[in-house]
Length: 447
Image 1 (tube, rainbow, N blue to C red):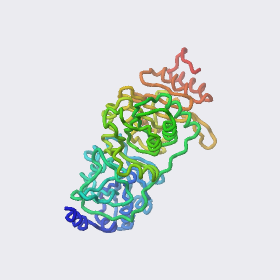
Image 2: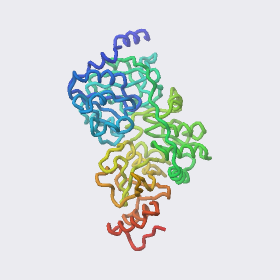
Image 3: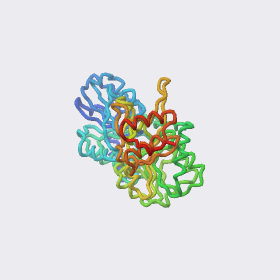
Image 4: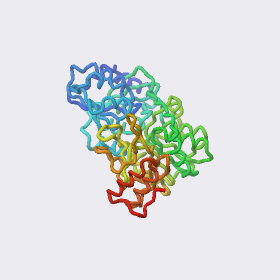
């Protein structure tokens, strides 16, 4: 049986240059998510620039050098389209890379239902196992949806990719693949853990005080989640669970300290559930072939209905600014694109609906730009700012000065709650603006 699989493997094996010839002018090409993004294939495709016109590339958090974007700054030949914006994406945004708005849990559905069909799909993955399966490794986000809908399917094998055991849609059989590239086995992209600032540590402390044994935790990326992970690791908390879109080094800290067992999870008991991983090499070594973790497609991990089934759920994310109505922007500074919706709204909605669930959105109370300090809590969002979480969804906001609960609060109560956690230097000004907006009552207090 294995000999037959090897023969099929050899028959489908091509060089990156040969695989790139599958792309034609006008095609849509899709790459795997994050550390699964095509690398050698994109480098080979860039060499064909002068042969091709109007090739559209879809990707999400492409973790490697964007060769095709670099060789074509005028996007005459290649145009990138990203489900999120971070890392390498930022220097190309709105030049030859454009954002695709989405709620993350809908990504596989949109791939199957609404996107212009993919002509060529390329995913970086593990080597084939003895049963003929390739594992998607660091990301099961929408890989199966990509492969199901593409005209041509290509896998780029990297023997350094961690093999991640799954809950669903984490692998692909050789019979489902058209071509295989044996890559250069470049190192898997890593990202460092941001060292939390004193302000982020203060925010994390407010959240830690609300945690208890048996909580199931979702963390975003950044200083505050890292601070929460460090504090949990040093705390007396126990029997914590994990259900998240992104598996980061903060979980590794908690796991090494023995805080994570998943013993009290309502579903996927004992399993750390995630959709993609990005972090240190130590993190990749930890998730490799680890039966205590389960990799799922993002329409499972981020589905608010699934999250709501997990009791005592805690979601911790970050944003850029919030207005006095409770509208949260986590994507832009005015019209300047910074990030994307990602899974924040998914977990804000799901965590709130969980029994005893808590959703925290964190932001430092101020920001300094070109020597000028301004409040991140604003009367209204900066003109052009994207609303990531509507005021109807926002549960709790956190600054270094405390936690504001917005669910169930009227407009004047929301204004009061938010101004209480604003920086003292800006509270009087915010009160005046709230009065102009007719959302401040004489009985309101900020002390």
